Image 1 (cartoon, one colour):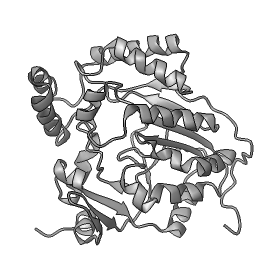
Image 2 (cartoon, rainbow, N blue to C red):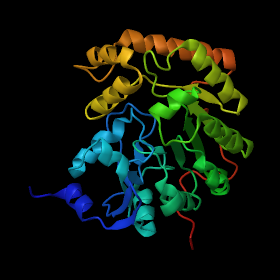
Image 3 (tube, rainbow, N blue to C red):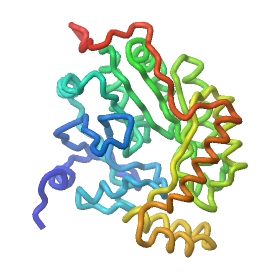
Length: 320
């Protein structure tokens, strides 16, 4: 088979480092900042510095993106991690073309603070560029406490831009988290990261996603998470229901058969012909979040604010 496009680039990508199970490769990239289509989101642009993710979350919807490179969305997604080839000048050029009024989200598919970030610091390099501009609206979503490493640069970015950080915390149940997210940081470390960031003036929220029937959708369990989020200084709280399509559906089904066989048949029937659960269930979950937000004094989303050195419309600082 003749490979073309990103599949060709992926298979030609040089190896940066090879561990016993995981290989890191450098991926040439034609574009860093991508337009988000569909209008369903509060942001118009997305950045994902890595392809694949070593955290190996069983429910990760982004697994299908490895298939674009003629790789598997199962084990390959967890063991072949691609770090995009950094080009500061090109990143700045792309940023200048993004309309100032449109928000940019970092980490919409794969985690920008996954294990590879410790080695290659692509997210940190991007933030260093954002620290040289003003008037931007930036969202960061992660389930790693590694984000605290960049606290100082985040403070610099937030002086002149609106910065909002989402920490995904799926459950406080240690055993459940270990099975669902085998290589992700513990939930208590993520809440500690929220406390560190909010204590330094960075606005944060906690996202309890995905919500999974019979696993983490009990209101009492989500209540504990809402209380923990509030105690850590989070300003908003929410979550979405599990979205399952191939190849994630097959990976998640195998997880259920190993860890929760009493639910395997239920999920197989529910997701056999559709990727989302019925609207009635989604509305019930949103009702739980509404009650918990009211109980814990949390918002549904981040509130707009004006950074101290905000200069709307300003682009790059000369000389940087």
